[in-house]
Length: 224
Image 1 (tube, rainbow, N blue to C red):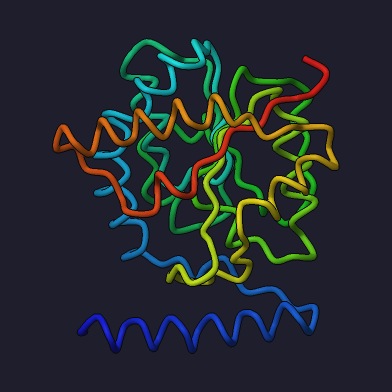
Image 2: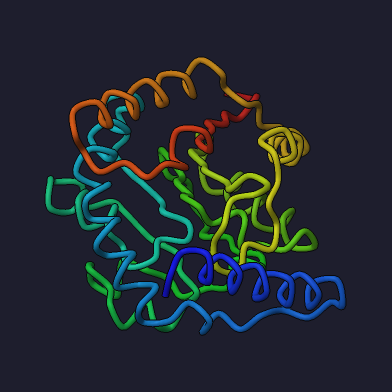
């Protein structure tokens, strides 16, 4: 399939998903199929090699929650490098068929519904998940992150970014306001440190997706 045809199909699919959202309907998480997660493994594993060390350098964390972890590529890297206090949350059955970590390390849960684990992690990570959460459920998703850690690292697709079931494409300021409502502030200094690290990775020849640097944000609990 050529890129132009693929882009048109994404546009048609997203128009249908957005119409469903406006009607109060939800798309089935099975739309993220085997091919989607095969690519998730291929690209995610390459990203984990440089991204997890960058996160550990900046945040010095000893525990990590990956919200919308897909096949668990970031979790796998952590486990392989001595960090066992990790957990993922994922809703797709196709992702569970391809998990790179033990199933005990991933909770199956639809992020459009409330989730509370009863504890906090040093860092809560959520990479390119936000745009898949409809507006009506965005507050629930943000509250899950805010309840899970005092430090949240998030990427969220912006308006115009293609992708499957991108039903909530928003500018960074939109998400910053949602976190502000949960008493979290956008941390510009830490965000820039992450962006600088992403640029270094790209310049070194590492696999870095085009959306990573512009979409990344760090949020910190105002009470800490």
